Amino acid sequence: MSGKTPLKPDEIYHIEDDDDMFDSLKKTVRKAGVIGGIVELIVGIVMLFWPSKTLAAVTVLLGVGLVLLAIVYLGAAIGTPIMPAGWRTLGILSAVLFVFAGIAIFKAPQAVGASLVVFVTIILGMVWILDGITSLFQSSFTINPAASIVYGLVSIIAGIVVLAAPQQSTVFLFMFVAVALIVMGIVSIIRALTFGRRD
Image 1 (cartoon, rainbow, N blue to C red):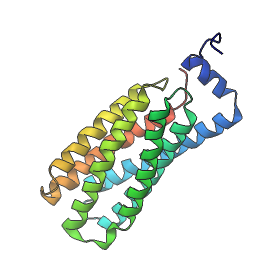
Image 2 (cartoon, one colour; image 1 turned 120 degrees about the vertical axis):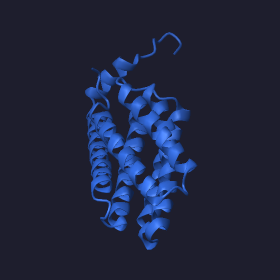
Image 3 (cartoon, helix red, strand yellow; image 1 turned 60 degrees about the vertical axis):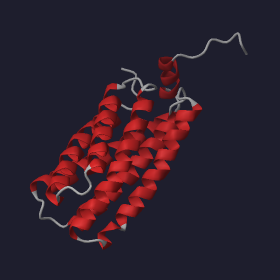
Image 4 (tube, rainbow, N blue to C red; image 1 turned 180 degrees about the horizontal axis):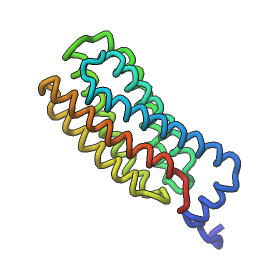
């Protein structure tokens, strides 16, 4: 009815805190986000300090990270009541695309050497840009937007760089992706831990 006063974001989150369903959802999103961030961090460190390690193993870990990222965005889209329908749809669409990207990367070890690096970085570039845009949109509907904004900006910049230079040397792409994964992994963990909090 028109006489009802719309709920404020903090009031909605207060209701969520008292609802077992939303509590369970927040825990799932936080857990998936933390695990995904840790995977990104580990992969970035391995790529940066032990570049001689097999690319196939790193590729599989990246695939796992993308699937976990899909869980985070799906949970955020479903569990954020104040998010407009259009942006909620964007979050769900992003989750679906991340799953497909993860599956594509799982199959990437069939490639070898430099071609594998280029293949993975091109997929990561597209995913990072979409991830960054989605993160920036969703930051407007979270109680603690700072981590999502930082993550979104870093993700978009990293995506543009790798897509603009897919034919750069293998060493450049490898090192750039490594550093980007470390930064994004750290921010992703922070973002996950603050998901759904009111303070």
